[in-house]
Image (cartoon, rainbow, N blue to C red; front, side, top):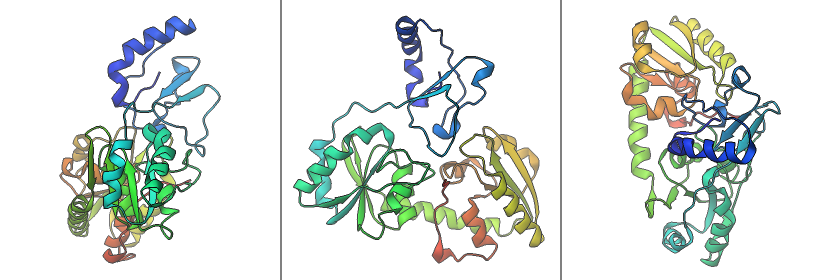
Length: 306
């Protein structure tokens, strides 16, 4: 059994219930699990099958028949918040969410249409299972609508997913958070993050040595990209080394004595964990700005596609 952070408190009860109802014996893999990109493909060393709770499968990430994905949806109400959200939305709305609320998408769409909105739900690339579903690393379901909508409504908690939609599309995003019963935008957060990213790029431009980070997680592994980035840095007279890890820890990386890092792993690593690093940490798209291949005005959000 593999569980995300939000379900580990229920692990013991889940094991008891499943063992009682199936007759099988369950082990809980206690390493952190960050999504369907993080399926433990070494499960055969411990068991006959793997049940991965909380995430939808990534169609383009091939797993064997011994892996079962069990989606978990949140038990919360959203309809009473729709009228308030509608007041802050434009006329043409793109609707997005995570798998935890995917079962509410059509209900919210109908409610917004009753409020006079034109609502579209996009289809993502091969990494995305459900229409309207976004991941921290992939907002293709949102960007597929960018030419046909003026803003987005994100259903869910947290800031990173709506921030990713805003950075990935360049459009305003309103958040309907059913857990804290709040309607908000991400404009102030987006401005603050962009200032942080600009600062990281400026600092990294002075670096002479770079660590290029590669995740060994099956859905985050971008070794070919890391090799391309190293070749680019070499051509600019910079020293670079590729570092591969399953869980990337800034405390361990500090010991390598490098001036800056570039992460080819989950985009959240550079953005969410920025303050944990003593050295600047960039996304591959941000390195393009450092190397003069992209202008700051053309800043784009890093994503992992098919």
